Image (tube, rainbow, N blue to C red; front, side):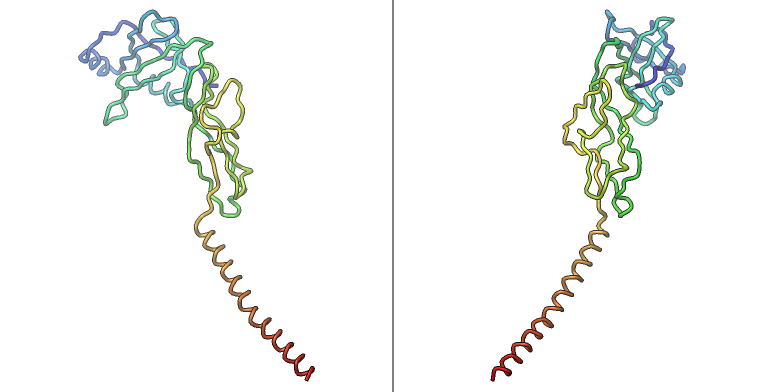
Length: 226
């Protein structure tokens, strides 16, 4: 489950592009809060540095944020970020207020752990997706989902249906969608083909000798008959 982070905020900010520019110039970020239990959205401002720290934990945008708005706390998730087109600066953020019984749909990062057995034979782990979509209680969002690949052999693949069962988590992607597979490098395939080719040449080389021996035996038999 994601850790809860407290972020201080102040209510009652002015609206409009000029007012937002003044807020940003002062080192803060204009924001809005809406969702469970709020009759109308709250216009707030938060410290830019503290906001960045809150959003750069392992949980990313799935971090549960306790917005302390002038002494009143609201459990939220940051859901819409307006970023500067050229810089890493956040220009505006939407916070969604949650209740303890809310379920949400979100993406969670997959953390592939271990070294596949196939690596000993030259196999290479391929992970076509890096996250999965889940439905879960807002208070139970995992910061990541661990996927153990240590037992994977040259012929193995892992699918959504192979992901670990987590309390309260429902996977929403197709159960047959591949999350990890072993790729055989082209060099290994070519090496196997070369070895197979050499084996076939050897068998073909042996056949004339066997045919010759049979003919000699037949010849001797005929001569004996005469």
